[in-house]
Image (cartoon, helix red, strand yellow):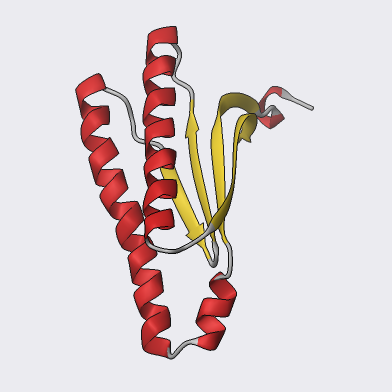
Length: 123
């Protein structure tokens, strides 16, 4: 393996949220109701992202990113270099995840969640 083939490892967090019963909601409801549920999930994520983004601009930290695929939500971020920035980033990440879990719960969308500290391989 030469130098250009090496992959740098970055430490960070990953949060995985699986919406329980999502496929059942889509299967057992009219298309309009299914669209409402999808829009509600998007709205919850966008509102929480905006709220936490404002907190991130105060501390100078980048907001953690997320990806939605079918009935799964993946939230992720990499750690900054300094300890203080790491603590700020973890607080932002935890705040976002907790707010999403709470909003999904109050919207009647049960979920299974896993949040881990991981080493992510980045190319």
